[in-house]
Image (tube, rainbow, N blue to C red):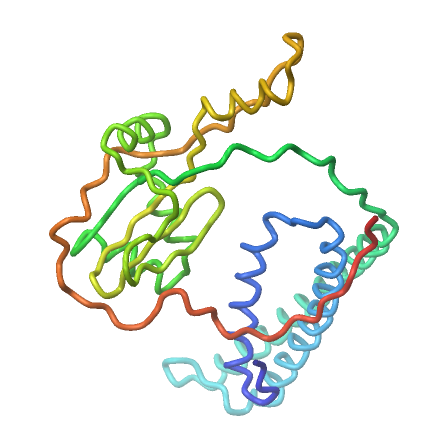
Length: 276
């Protein structure tokens, strides 16, 4: 939550919230939700403009106390006033960006989103193993997970995903699961068609990828479209990787804390767009 008195803490929280929004805004389940997001961004830009002006003011007021690393007061004052001027220029650019965003916000408010056509239920999917790392090999993805979050950890582990080669290896070796994280104390985070599984007590991390049996999809397509003139739905391109090591003989190392605790960010006020 914002403190309203600690600039350093509030700036860090705003940065984290914007980073989360950058990830979350890649897709929208309901297009009308974009209206509220743009409205909140407009409010945020006004605050950014105010912050830049205020920081520039402080630089000017405190110029008498400014020195550079070599102890030169003259150089310190010069850099302080330069910083203030650049901050004011940045504030002016934010003003111009806000005007463009406001015009876009007005246009978005005139959109009436129609619901997407109802699609037939897809064939049930399972999960195949992409990569399984433990011990020292798991240190790097676990560090990425702790410092940057599960989306970045998934992006890192996805380099072991070699498409059909991984799919065939997983099927041949039996690395196919009904649900990710079937082990005791497994923690699961989903990112797109990937599932990141971490067991902090045993000390391993694995990446699974959603898999749908092509035969089941073809059968569903035939039932939905009996006419030979109608094409079935196009299959999704699969992503996978080489055979992963078995989960036997895992090290007994234990890691403290949970990498899946949500970061405390300020509550964002939800605005509603126009939808049908």
